[in-house]
Image (cartoon, rainbow, N blue to C red; front, side, top):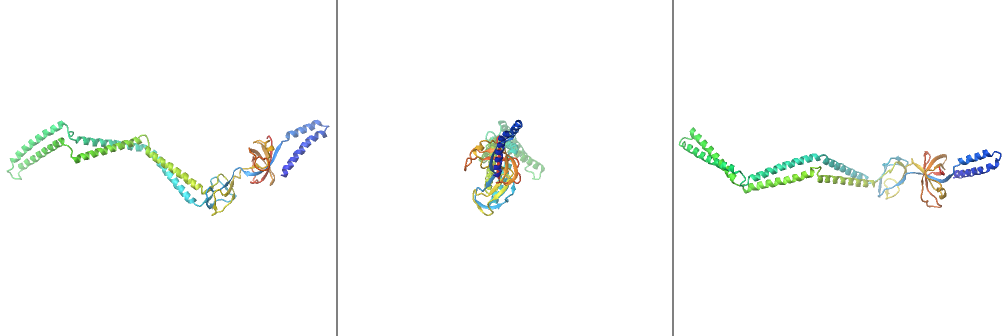
Length: 398
């Protein structure tokens, strides 16, 4: 403050000297006028105020939820990076485990979704093949059902040919039997008798086959056979319908139902991860930006309440000065961008340049009408500390 008073006194003496010099040097008027003019041109009006050194970024950290303080991971004066865990409440291990589990589920859900998209063409081809097989099976079952119904087992020409074959076969049986009868008196080991018996047996087999064919052509399925035919036709028809539905779903891409299901799984997993992250964030304090631990107001195993101040945290690399007593008359004369000279009560020999970066739009509460002005320092000397008293001379119109 003494520096501030001395500086103002110096300004008053300078003005007085400018007024007195012309009267004392009448013999050299031109030189005196030129000197006075030069002094006036060099004179720079200033606005002076007191301020305090503060970090541009500072915060008091607290937990939003109550609990027992499990661990303090930092010390006062320690510099940390953004995101560094500073403190943790009890229960964070379980919260970490829950978060890891939800993140794993999200990975698996995304892999499932990728698999659906990646195999879409293969699934489409397999479904198309299944449709073709189902179509063939249905057509076979339909054909078998139709050709075994009465009146559809054979054409009339086939029936006529079979009847003719039966007549011929019966005549052949009669001839073979007559031939065999002519040898019936011979012994069983007679060769001609044996040949006649073979011919008779063959003729009877041919006749029986022709008769069976004719009966099948003219007949109809039994109740059991018809039930089996009906069931096979119904089954293949239902399988064909399912195959057609499956093909419709996947012919243009992944099955919509499958895609909706796996996308819902991904969405659920994301929501679970977010909820787990929120739950964990309630139990830990992290550095909101790179800075320094200025104060710690608790210790491990203590019970802490929501909002209780625990850590004073600031970025000490970006200190600035905030005025505390700049009155309304002086505030009206300065503008953002004005340059200033800043000195410090504790550092008498130190002088730092600064610039106005903020002028409050509303006066501060307290005695008198004062406005807060913030000045950024062009350089922050190592000895300058948070909370030091500063004296500011702002050059008006600079």
